[in-house]
Length: 331
Image (cartoon, rainbow, N blue to C red; front, top):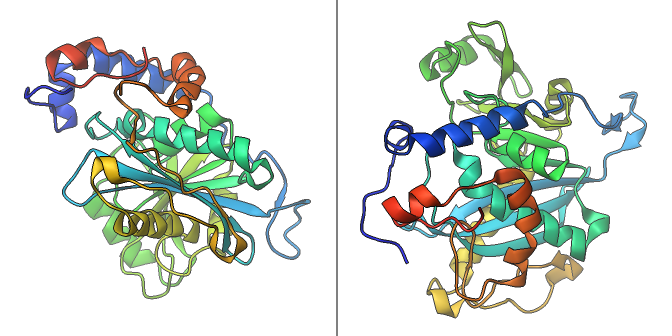
């Protein structure tokens, strides 16, 4: 399917070689960024006496794990945790083939379609467990154009999202070294944080200390339909380790799924049963669903995403399919 032509591996290379497509994606990000809501959709209640009136019951986490040494074949995971027990009550693993290369600041165009499919599946299969707030392994508005993966995902699904990142994307006069030094100077105990205020005066997010012994922060930011204040308060109840439990569980379970199943394309199987009575929709087709490209005989689930991708992502395939062998499925 793909040619041997080189593909861009950095943002600079991509923007230099595919300027028209880069401009289109930037425009989409800017237009969709205007739709991000920084306010809570509900007066959430997640601890006694917090003044909220809507009990928080289900929190989601999403992550995508790749086969070792393979940047294309991956397992996209959605888990739902019951709050406050943090017990996993729903999980869905989907093998996908992400043929679009990773390009910094454009991650959403590579990963969002797979995550959209997971949301569509839970809406069809277990709508009663649709998460009220979802933590995403990726930045929200903490992004050079204010529209990272968590925001992209949130706007397209119209659901509350929180951006969680383990590394810092430099922007607005803030460097990795500067943020790390300030964090270590000012943050002492679990739950403390350092506000990421750029040279422009904008508050982009926070560097958060998840546990008392955490040396490095996690970076939290608004994805969509949630306030930064609520993110700070809620995250305190979700960190057993450095990474908030919803994202941690999505990561652990997607990696375990890859270990438990054959890594040959035509030998993926569907695990039998639902252990411990939990909702487990860990299904895979005999071939991975190709998210950024076309398989002969596209699956029903891939086709079901067209309403999202045609309306919102507007991906253009001409440059990639002719120049570097990557054919985007949605135009």
